[in-house]
Every structure is written in C-alpha cells, then in structure tokens.
Amino acid sequence: MENLNVLIVDDELGMRKGAMKVLRKFTIQAPDVDHGQIGFNVVEAADGNEAMEKLQNEPFDLVLLDYKMPGLSGLEVLGKILQNNIDVLTVMVTAYASIEVAVSATKNGAFDFLAKPFSPDELKSVVKKAARSLIAQRQAKKLADEKRKVRFQFISVLAHELKAPLAAIESYLQLMQRHTAGDAIENYDKIVDRSLVRVTGMRKLIFDLLDLTRIESGEKKRNMALVNVTEVARQSVETMQVNARERGITIELHAADNIQLHGDSSELEIIFNNLISNAVKYNKDDGRVDVSIRKEDNQVAVKVTDTGIGMTQEEQSRLFGEFVRIKNEQTRNILGSGLGLSILKRLSALYNGTVDVQSEKNVGSTFIIKLTDKNDNHS
Amino acid sequence: MSKKTIVIADDDIDLLEQLRMQLEAKNFEVEAFESQTEVEQYIEEHEPDLAILDLMMENQDSGFVLSYKIKKLYPHVPVILITGVTSETGIKFDAATDEMRSWIKADIMLDKDIRFEQLEKEINRLLPDRYE
Image (cartoon, rainbow over all chains, first blue to last red; front, side):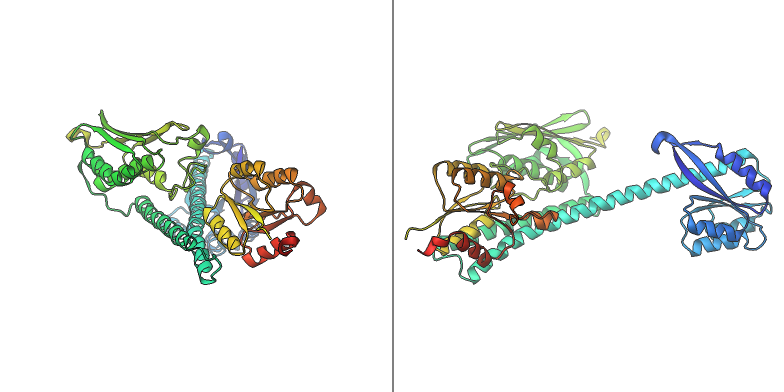
C-alpha cells in the first residue's frame, strides 16, 4: 500500500488528535497505484513556525492548515509554502468560513477548503478529493517524463543516423584530398558512387523524418475528401515500376475500379508508396509484388505480398521500432531510413487502422493494412 | 618481394572500402569482407599475413570469434581488432595485459576512429619483415 504524508497544523490539540485518529485508519481505493490502496501517515504541528520547519525538512503530500493560529497565521504559512516552492497540496481549515477567506486562500494556492466544525466524513471526503488529485497529477507527470525520455532516445538515435553518412562522406573526401586512395581510377569512381549513395540515404531519412514530424505534430493539414483508393494505388504502382523493372520484378494491382475511403489522398499515397517500395526493395530479382485492395464493411483492407527475402519471427518482432533496420547478409546493400514502417503505423492510426505482417524467411512477406472509413454512412 | 596479404572485415561497407583503398595504396594485397561468415570461409583455404577485424559484425563478438579461429589455424598471424564499442558504451577492452590477452586472442585492439597513419605504424610493427 502506498502512503501519503499528511501534516495537520492546528493550535487546538483536540482538533489535531481528532483528525489524526480519523485519517490514520482511513484508506482510499485507487486502482491505478500499487496494491490499489492508499493510506495516510499523519504528523502534527501546533503552530505556523513548527509547520514550516516540518515542511522544509520532510516531504509532505498534503497539509491541513488551520486559518487562525497565534503567531504565523494559516494564510502566512500558505504564502511561505508558495514562496519556498514546497511541493504540497494545501487544504485550508477555518471556523470563519467566508467567501473572502476562501478566495484569498485559493489565490494563494490552496487546493481546497474545509469549514470548522467538520464531521469525520467531511474530513474524509476533502482528503479523498485531494488524494485523488495528487495521484492524477503524479500519473500525468510520470507520463510526461516517459514521453520526454522516448523523445530524447529518438533524437539521440536520429543524431547518430545523420552523423553516420556524414562521417562516411567526409572520410571519402579526405582520401581524395590527401591522395591516399591509390592510383586506380576505379577507386575514385567508387568513392563518388558511395558518397552519392550516402547522400541519397540521408536525404531519404530527412524526408521521412519530415513526414513523421508532420504526422506527429498534427501540423499537417488533413485534406479530407472521398478518395478513390484504387487510383492512388495505381499511381503508386506506376511510380515504383521503374525500379521494379530494372530487377525484373512484376507488380500487379488487384482491386475493383473505384474503392472509396474518406481520407487525405497524400496520406494514402505515403502508405502505398511505403508498402510497395518495401515490397520491391526487399524482393528477389524477377520476383512478384501483388497489391490487393478490398472493401470490408466500413474498412478498406490493403494487402501487399512480395516474393522476397522474408523475415524470421525474431526479425518480425523488432520490425516496427523506430530506426530499426533488419540487418543481415541479404539486406546490407538495401538503403532505408528505418522510419518507413513507423510512418505507416502512425498514418494507419489516423484511420483507426491496423498494420499486420506475415512473413517467412526466404519466401516473402505480406503486409496487411486495414483503414477505417469514419464517414461510412455517407459513402 | 611479394606483397603481404591483409584480411580486412567490417560490416560498414564504407569503412571497409576506405581501409581497402588506403592499404592497397601502401602496396598491400587486400582481401576485404563484410561479414564474419565470409572471413571464416576465406581463412579455411588461405593464410593471410595479417588480419584487421571489426569487433561487431553480424554478431556482437564477431571479432573475438574470428581472431580465436585465425590464431588456432595460424598461430603466428597477427590480428588487429577495431572497435567502436568504447565510444558507444564506455566499456574499454584492450589486449595490453596478459590477463586480457588470455581470452582476447587479438594482438592489439584499436579504436574505430584511429588515424590511418597510426594503424599503419601498428601494421609495420606487427609485420617487421615487411621490407626485407
């Protein structure tokens, strides 16, 4: 059970003892924390100075703060809590319940307000509300921290991915500058070829990254319209034909003439380009790519099957990570940013879609994307 | 004088090419490979004069495994391991102490961003009869 630390500040001994007795036996259900329950450790302070001393030396989650005390008043303590940046939730307790007190207390950062005299149930109810708020705050913070961490990891890997081609090109240039690459002209051809390959790879990475950030930030304006998915697929097949023909690969589209979906045609284009270019890239020479599109209820199912190098189970399990590129003998000369499938996944999510893969090593892979048509009733 | 043959292996094709060009320019015969498997096949049939191996190729310990195999077949062939591990993980390996050498079969381990001149110096040290 997780415990919250509560400080009760009141100059009346009876009040302190009473509240302590109630809270020490009190637990609240909180399904999101460990063991699903929260209890309270209660500490008392008889005046404002003692309260400040305790707040500065021990971590508290919640303060029940009496408004009217000799010496430092409750409002002054509240001011000091704010001033010293002490991370604690404050509930003001007072017999002089008035709007003015409430307003000035909340202005100074009090979370809630409890009027004297109060019943054990009233106390419990206020504490419960405060505890729930604390838990929610903490969970939000945890989530934000995790997000920041993922972001940071992404940027570190990205920096590495951008550095690698630069380093390679720089070294090639230095070889030429220092004339240390020998006399063979083929070496210089190779240097230029490889440098261009790395430049192309880097450009692809930057473009993919831009796609990804636009999708992520939601900054890209979505032009929603009724799109002819078959037509988008046909154009994408057309674009990929050049590369495919060079390697004797056949691409075939199997789809009814006008399969429609409410969506953004440029998003759908990215989806098809990614799927089909992967199917060509990771294919064998003289292989096949079959693209089929079917309308299933309110979904459009896209299936792209290749006769390529395929993947092992282990490789499939790593496939959708950012910058993950399956590294083996067969893929080492294939260029890619490692972001293609991340983009695919994010775009599909915009359509409440799913991305599935079936693959067998040395036989081929099938990617199945299902996109949901939100405005199905009108189509 | 016949040319000395150096086996080089790195799964980064650019580093491999750059090393090949520079070594050939220094009049070495170079056999370049992109994987542990290819080196294993090569050494079964051929004895090189020296090997320069990337530590991590298709396996994290490719370089260790290869230097072990090379030393077993040809105990006198010097092996240089090249590693980027130190700069990436902070783990430092070297073959400077007897204890390290007892399990790292390589003669020396060098960092990936070593300058070619330094590498050449090490090669010349390990192949003293090069200019006989």
